Image: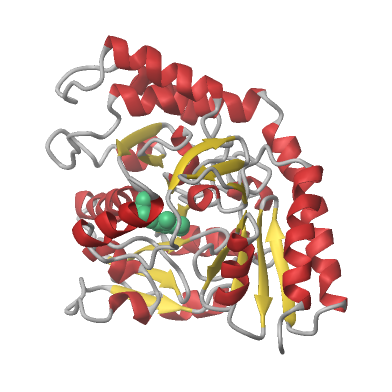
Length: 397
Ligand SMILES: *Cc1c(COP(=O)(O)O)cnc(C)c1O
């Protein structure tokens, strides 16, 4: 089948929930992918911050191959070796003592929401309301949709799950004003991804933690997008000298294999007892074997250092473009999640880049998002700019 036939097949049988670009990707290696016609693309999307190690990292490929020959799935009715080992690795490298595994970011946030409610039920406190942020993104299931502070995702699915309220990001005072005797938790992305790469001010997260502690409520960090090295630290919260009570992970956790995880301290995790929550596929041997390989690669192959170094370089280069192009409003980011806010829609720039062999993403209509694999090099950044700049030159503003 050629590209045209495959796109027709896809459009005929796949539910129409994505506006897909008209290319069929068939192969990837490090920071590059190839389409069915053999055209090469430099990939600054990385599967939407999933392929942090680059495409088909040999350690992940080998781990999947080895595990697939041994055992792909058994139920969580039994103990699973790679699951236990990945949980140990995550706990030893974070604030947490316990991990619940699932299969996606939304599921990890569902688990966090359920655990926060259950924790207070167990203490016989009537707290069930969760404060989240405007422009947040927490997933597409009914609970995480209600947690997501953006109307455009919620429209058509009402009535939403009750007891979520939204306040502006970066505003501790607004959170304080919103807390009632029903509040059980504050849920926040340390850096908002989907909502436009919004960076917290220096003290925001620390102040939030102090507030939550003072009010006796839980702080949940959704690190589904910015965890696993994306910001130059293994977890984004490490940049801000603060740790949450509960954290969720997914995207970059297993080198491209579907996985999700909710991490918590012992004190809080103990409210999940047998029968209170579950996932058939959660923490299965294949996904967790990939997760171990991915986490070790991030920690042992200098990816955090590379993310900081090349991230800084990319930031400076993109920020430097502001002087040349008046339609660039602001460049912001941390490590290798960088947003370039425009005064115009970004879609035509993304399309033009794709035509010239570069994949970038646009979020919230006007924000170009650069989220390359953490192994990206300065040369690849230069290569990216050589494609991007002529396209910016052609923009009518
Ligand atoms: C992508 C994302 C989610 C949802 O993850 P899925 O795996 O698509 O369910 C949740 N939170 C954040 C911050 C995300 O970026």
